[in-house]
Structure formats: C-alpha cells, structure tokens
Image (cartoon, rainbow, N blue to C red):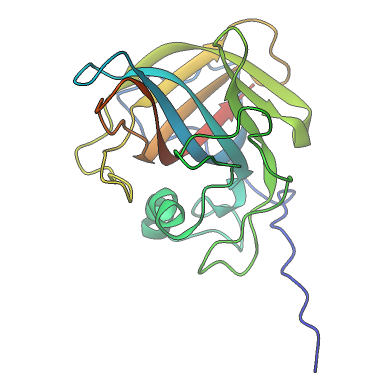
Length: 226
C-alpha cells in the first residue's frame, strides 16, 4: 500500500499583495505602510456577566492565526474565487474544531490555552494553511498579536470599529458576528503597526444567563500592515 504524505503548507513567496480589505466604512491605512499578511483568526471571544440578565462585557479573545495571503483572489495559482474567499471564515468555523485547548464550559485552558503550532487543514483546499501566530490579550488586558513565524508583534489599541453587516454569518452557535475593527499600535510593536479585523463569523455573546464567564467560537480575517 502506498503511503500518502500530507499536503505541504501553502508558501507565500510568490504572492502579490492587495492593498486593503473591502471595508470602506473603516479608515484607509496610511500611505506609508504596506500590507504584510492576511490571516485567518480562529478561536473564541470571551465575555463576563455580572449577573443573570446583565449586559455581557467583552474581556478578550484567544485565536490562532493562519496566513491566507496567497488565497486572496488573483494573488497566486492557489488563490480562491471571490465567493469562496468571502465564505472562508464561515466555512472554517462551521467545519473545523476550534484550535484551542478548551474546558468543558467552552472557555480555554487558563494554563495552556494554545495547542501545538501546526497548519490548518481546510475541506476543499488541496494544501493546508500555514500557521503564523497567536492572538491573545496580555496581563494588562491589551490585545496582542504575536506573529512568531514572522518575528513580528503588534500590541494594539482600538482606533475605529463598525458593526458587522446584517448578512454576516452568525456562527454555529447562532449568536451573531462580532464587530469589524481597525486597530493601531499601542506601543512596543515590532514589524507591524496596524490591523483590520473584517469578515467576522460568530463570536457574539450568548447573553448573560447567570453570573460568570461566557465564550463563543469565531473566525475573522485580519489584515496586518507595517
């Protein structure tokens, strides 16, 4: 019996980068920056509930980031068609297990939330999508993007945001899609200075049914510039 080797990850050396995401309601990137990566973020959004019926308070997120630059339509031989690109976050969220070490309550492990670094195999793609980094909130509650495969780091702050379109995928839990965001450098970043979060799928809170925390799975595209 022949041994079938796993498909190699997509390579990025031949990609021609687009200029910006199609989110005209958010500010355009400054002219002195260039696109570094487009990534698929796949993880959970976390919320806190003071009591039953309270408004959920966002308390951060955890996600693994996969480099999908070459999948952007028209960039390389491996690029997706526009319709498939637009549905990529939702397709992954609906068909793949969240790449985190999760507890029974749906939250991530407090001591070791991230599993082994590895590419993401997606149904319908011949090659796996390469791992690029991780997204988390640091001890001070600041959104952080550690693109360790590229030796880049973004310590971020919110500059602007808009509600996800009404047509945005609600996710397998039916909660709705989280906002689209434009984040800048909060100081201490390296190699990248801003990021857009667009094409979100899922991630909104389930609502406060009791005091405690709540986690919802989500995906999104993150466009990094520097």
